[in-house]
Image: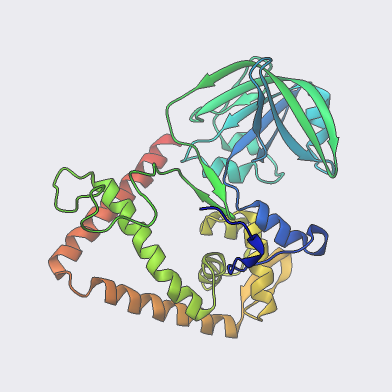
Length: 332
């Protein structure tokens, strides 16, 4: 389809304007682009430095160059400039905790993860899907960031799927033909619901995707988004800070901050001491409305399914969840 007059488009942007007018809105727009997640590490002597970054990209095959960017005000900048080398750990789908640990400066980061020294001494994380060990090739001044270009001296690729980040949320890739948009329905030749050979996980993905799409209308009716809804749900349990909210709600910290600002503007949450946030009385009312809507949605979607089938499905799902938790415990 060719559009000769773009000005006639009827679709309206969610937000638009000059970046200088609303930096957060501009950042959310950049967040529409899905990226992988990396942790960049280096060492100066025995001092180790690491930070999460999604600005990594390939530059050249010959010579083998890659780049990433770091804020000029970052406390880690001096270490990366001084060392002259860095390692890039491309995280796997189950390493979101590693991403969170290195998402902001904190003490004893490397004591919380398994790592081995690379060729130049910079930490490499077992379990990542790729390692790139680089010598610093060039540092470029770019606004409020420095761009570090590295020449790859050694690489390693492993089996696994990448951890992704988009629209403020962590995610994992799904092959298009396995889980197309919209989710396949009965009769779709790509997902034969009556075929016993259909992979169970494909059915699970399709069901999850379909239910999430259908519930979106209910979120709109209550006046929340995925992010603000998750934050409200967590704050009904206890007051929490941005970092912990991001971890339990599976949201990026910038997304949590934006959600809190939006909710605070509606008097649904309020700041507390020690950087924590708490839900307000109006917030509890909205969250209760969301729970009622979710209960109604749940009843509507399950109304024609026999009780014994639901019980069997719940047992299967609990088994899978416990299996994942047990696996994580064994790996610690």
